[in-house]
Length: 224
Image (cartoon, rainbow, N blue to C red; front, side, top):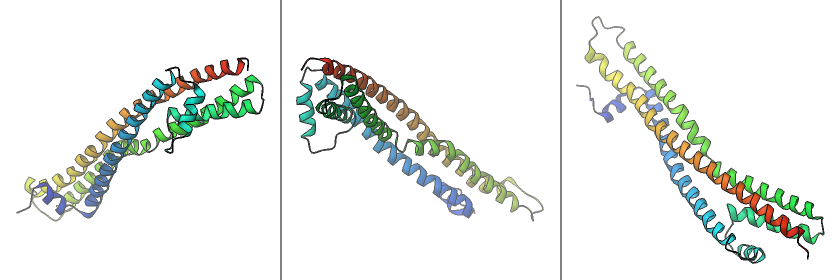
């Protein structure tokens, strides 16, 4: 009697179908691991941005805030990194006695570069989730088509085919489609969620960058 349990169907599947299932399984595992890491990183970035904005708008002297950040051993990221890059370049340009507009432009460029690095970190590996979400169903479908072809090929020398003869082969083939969907659906949902959260963070960074640029412009124009 054929083993019609899930494990039995997988064990009795053809080698190409088994390879497809293994590929989809690893894709799913890597996707979930990436979701866990990315979720933590974005949450940390959101919390850091909220905390830093509270400090920045509390009325603290910007020189003191820069000194506090620069004196920390851990690496700055997110809004802190944007602020630190901008203020460091602002202080350097003023020390070089550049004109006011050049000072502000130089600080603005430094912040744009820092923001690009932070956005790149937020976006990193999201393309993997998009790839898994878009490709997995087709990989699973390939396994299904191959399995069905093998099932019907096995009936070539049979004079009278019955559903009982075809059903196990078709069942094991359809597992590949199910596995493809199981890998794709969470990846697509996670990608859309993370992409929206990254877009929201980018807007926060851009707003802060422009507001801080305005503050630096007023400081540059203020009499020494």
